[in-house]
Length: 138
Length: 181
Image (cartoon, rainbow over all chains, first blue to last red; front, side, top):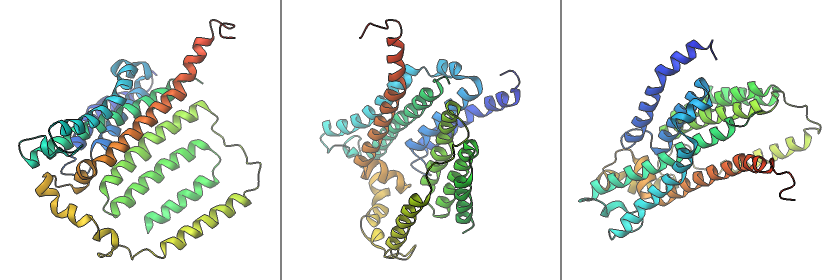
């Protein structure tokens, strides 16, 4: 672990930009390629890179396994909750048109929330699977 | 064409090689080539997913699995004749199925005449989202994406149960050996 100076320094340089790129893919998904799924995978890849370079315990201090296990159902709940919110506002399930003051804004808000739910579930699942694999000793 | 040739070369390499480490790395290269094919086909969203999931996460998970097992593939004990036969028949049936498809890229193919024109005409006025992929995925076809998210949720929970549940049981069973009879 002491001799991998280059990968450590390189990873430290890269990590924030990977997360930034993930957020860009998330919030720019309306205009360019990308969306919640891709952004979730990129965010999870950042944590996985961190775990590979600095060791699993260090990564689990940043993102504890409990948080990851909460993230998996939380994303689905945000997604389903958006649908229920539309339902309570008097629209159809997952029809976002009633969420805002006009159609376009409502749709954008709904898509944003839904993509956020996808991001959280995907990132949580990917990190959880990686933790489960990496946590098993030989 | 170049990309497809490279894909074929990698596939043959994966079949021929016995060193699983090399096979995993070739699998990552295959995914990147596949992502390039998707970009050539103008499916940028799919390309991004393929590059991040296929080449990134699954390669890492495969390497993690390799760490737990041996890195050399065992020589097969059966002759490969029957699997080869099944693969050739399946491939032939699939190729036969493509013969009825409309020519590639033709504008009046059935898939372009059904709901796609509605999405292209109404995505911006109705949702204000210029990327039609996103508006279809998250708004018009929200139910489908909810289902996909649930599938990911189920997959995550299942993997956690399989990989962590066993260890918890093992750990719980250790202290009291005759506890549960």
